[in-house]
Image (cartoon, rainbow, N blue to C red; front, side, top):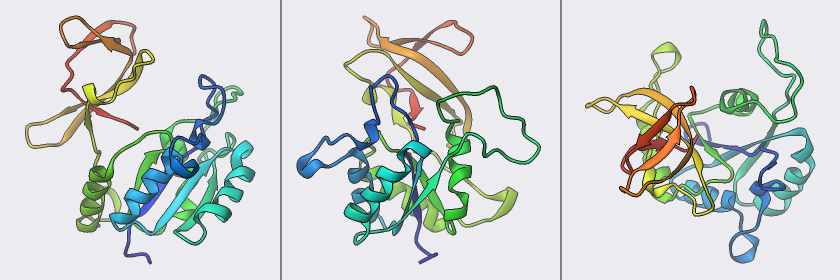
Length: 218
């Protein structure tokens, strides 16, 4: 159904810090993963196609997962993100084990996408409200080509932190009329005594960020 939006789930992470593929970790009743919650909320918002972007090592487990868990619930497809698959004319960096970033993952999903789509991480919880906003936006935005309009669902920083230590977040600076102006990743964000958060910018400089700052989860 090309008229309905699709959901691209980025699930190629190797979970080096976690100790394994956290996107497959069972966190809820019946062995539910965070992906299950995203797919459930997305379906309630009108999504009918889901594309999982996985690394080569996880292709087999995900094919089993799709067959056993999603086949009768949603139109599901798998796209494999391979390090060597880069656009023509692009020279890949020296050999690496971890996958490239979000842009490369979305590029890997391109053959499986034939409609407007949203992108989420496999290991984040977004909430139904976010998917409803995305579905409404995609339902009213269909300009193709260079004039296409894109959107980002942002969250207040204070609602996205972990009790387990510092986190990295992409700080979004937005104009008064709602247009995204800049995105800057701040690493090792931790609470300060004054209610704000302290982190480090890409140049290694200390940064103070308020808890109401908008951040992207991708």
